[in-house]
Amino acid sequence: MNLFKIVRKKTDKGISKSNPYRDVGTVLLFVFLLPYVISSLWGHIGEETDNLTEGKKEKNEWIDEKYEIAISGNWGIRKMSMHEYLIRKLEIVLGQDEEESMTYEFETLKAQAILLRTELWGLILNNNERDNDKNVIIQDDTIMYGIKGKSTICEQAVENTDGIYLSYENRPVKAAFFPVSNGHTRAASEVWGSISYPYLVSVECNQDILADDYHTQVIVSKDEYCRIIPELYINAEAIENNPYNTWKNVEFSYDSAGYVVEANVDGYSLSGETFRTAFGLNSASFNAEWKDDEVIFHVTGVGHGFGMSQYGANERAFSGETFDQILKYYFFNTELAKIE
Image (cartoon, helix red, strand yellow):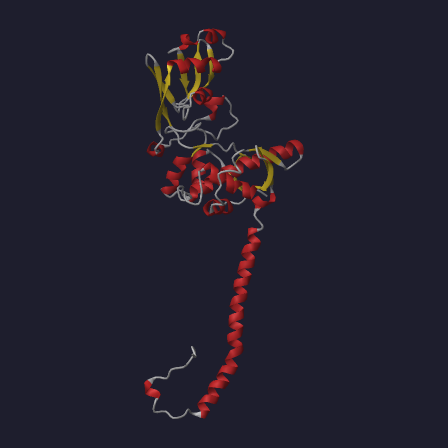
């Protein structure tokens, strides 16, 4: 069967033969136009090839690819580029995988990628200034696990912000972030009594109240509480000898954002972060409700409260803010810079 058989229209049945001059003209026209057609076709193909080549060339020139990170874990040591590390770390930090990659707005992913790069770039600079060596070793047991494959959107976020970090007075900032605030972020000066991080100030995060884990509670029995307390105040013999005397006898001091700064028992104190970690509390923003045989910790937010709230940042991105606006909101008086 001839699949390319030409079927004439019914109106052509009365025509017994074609005009020879017309056929000659058709042939000549085809001959003259053929070079142009071929040139046009190959010209477009060449353009497409150039575009693909240029795209591949650009991909191989990422600034992040120029720096190598050594990752140390319980599986050994593996080296990878900063580019690959940031993609993997971004997936882990925000719980990204191929099925959940749209949980966060793209501008949130870019803001988070910049904070991760900022942290790395700070380590590289400090290491280079101290040992004149650009190689950095990071202890990370999670980076090689839990990855189902490179998440496309995480890769795009890293590449869209290639080489960009957050700076204050020409130095990488302390790139702090956490999941959910209690409605405010914390000021570093109140907690650490230092002016080393003037950009970590307290800002409102009203959107965080919408988070599923904004409010949680933890119930601890009296016996369990009195077992843990001596382990925290290890230098206090009175507490160690009779921990039950500490029941209902702890005083919490708070910063202006509502996070516990210190937990004091019989003149001994420790940080709110240490206390909340020991009792498995989501954050140091809590208060205690004492009962006869148990204590109920009412907790607000998730994480340490410094820097960028990931939930709040995502809500701001959803409202239309860009990654640079988000970062400037959470990190006062900072600016974006480019690794050279």
